[in-house]
Image 1 (cartoon, rainbow, N blue to C red):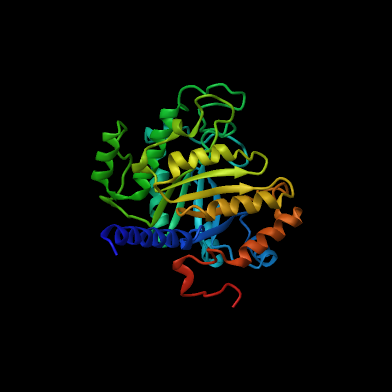
Image 2 (cartoon, one colour):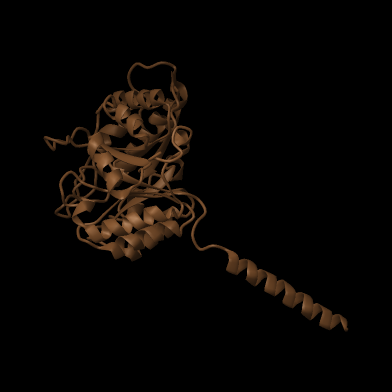
Length: 343
């Protein structure tokens, strides 16, 4: 056999080996995805949802207004054996009054609350996702640069105010020495840490999520990039995606721009009609992306998004959860206590 023939055979063998390796590579991700739901403040509601879907939700998103204490939330998180995702808004739930502006946050007017939050999360001791001011480009949110009429909110609510506020929240809640925190803040052209505090702030196990909507709400310049605080201040990239606005092209574009280099989360998703195809498509969208780590179903605070209103979709989700395709029921901190939720 000539040297040329041998070379051709070797080349064909290597090509065949490469093709076989490519075919055997799974399309779904190996890393786990954690399915979650939003918190209504009642343990019974969570348990009822578990029973309906025969699945222990490992992730629970709790919504708090600025300044709220965790004295009721932490016992609930422990009792339900979940990893919390704490969303912080700047408007009072009942009065709808704005409690603090983005400018007020970065100027240090909320440092007392941020230091208390730092201590409370450290005392909790377990990992926590912190989601400050989610859906920043949603026009109805008080920290958005635009209002629901499409007009700029003006001073104290600019893109820069939001980004600076986010950076300050990240820097203080993460903890460290008072001197180092103040130095970091001043390097970002903000006031140093305000108020009395010990020389060292604890360092809780907190993962900070930045989570705008993937589109621009129909306003040029109101896209996610305008609210991006910089990779140094983001641990996980997240977004919201609802069946009422299935902008798949925006979701894919957002993921390509921000989601490839960090852990990714569908921080809120929901149905406003019985749409099992949407529920299945979004779940598999997440499963097929190696760094998508979580999905949180938004139940709302009325019946509009409740899964029990959408029996076909609920059944589809139940089947997806039952298939256990990388959808896990417990985070590592709870695995020792519960190998299975219903055992």
